[in-house]
Length: 199
Image 1 (spheres, helix red, strand yellow):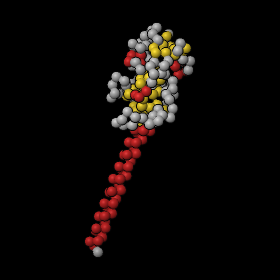
Image 2 (tube, helix red, strand yellow):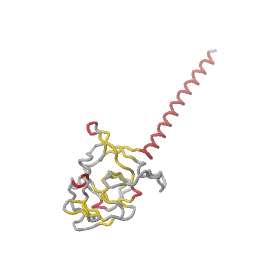
Image 3 (cartoon, one colour):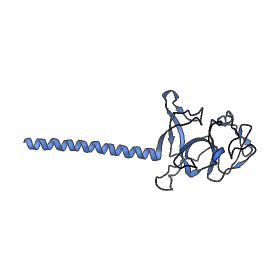
Image 4 (cartoon, one colour):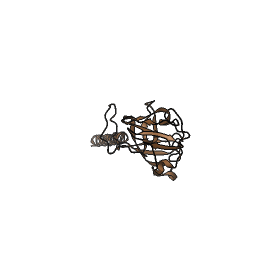
């Protein structure tokens, strides 16, 4: 009787440990799937997007909206919508695949963009949306020179930091290919006093 009882307790312990391990494995797999295909947290490292985003802000990025990348392939899931002007996007930095950047989408494929007197012009018309016309954009970098009109290639985007004085953006290094898009920034979730939808 005693031997059976001891064996029974050992089996119960093994069963409990197994359930615990299985729960951890399932949680890890779900977290990995969510992080890869649905939503991912990022930390803002610099002031290039001030005052929309501040250094140290923790944000959530919607990864499935533009079609999440399938790891270890060149494939993506179907996009729910196309990127639009004004979106705050996270992307793989074209000059270094190991870096992720965050900027605001200013120019779309096929458009002509110019920065003149602090204003962004697209196809010779000033951007009048408050997201853009309340900021001053400086003529800096190879692609942001005064008097230069930039033709944006197909399947590429022109991005700008909201803090134009300090932002290393498309003015300096050019265009963001569609394939480099990781997602759209949707929410600041930390610090608590800065919780808000990103616009």
